[in-house]
Image (tube, rainbow, N blue to C red; front, side, top):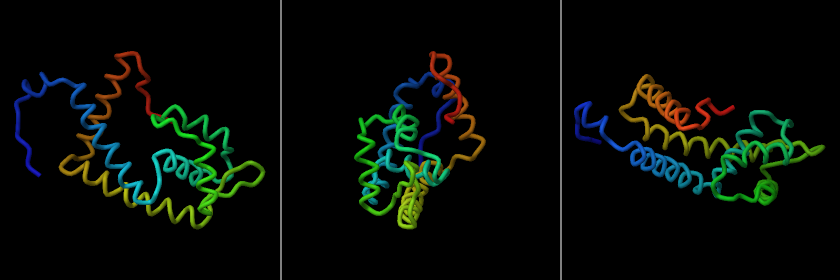
Length: 152
């Protein structure tokens, strides 16, 4: 991949809204396409990761409360949990969610697909540049009244 080089003055004059929207659309689109290969949505992915990270901690209600603010697809989380249960990926004991072996295998396949998108996105960008970009975006968000802290 080759992109043109520009002066700092030219780059500083660019509209941040254009570039952030363009980047967000391509990143989210790439991840959603990768997940769709496993018949998953982003909320499926978030759910699988949260459950895998703390087996038996999450109830449907607490996980939905945690994830709903990030959801731009108006997801029916009850239908999502039913889907994962029907696939044999999710079990529920005493209202606590746990992935099955099949669920963990599916999560790992989806992770591998997402990792390819992330690797492609980060080509030619080292960790220092990436971290600086994230920190700049955090400050822009905070300056405009949003929460500039990292998600918990």
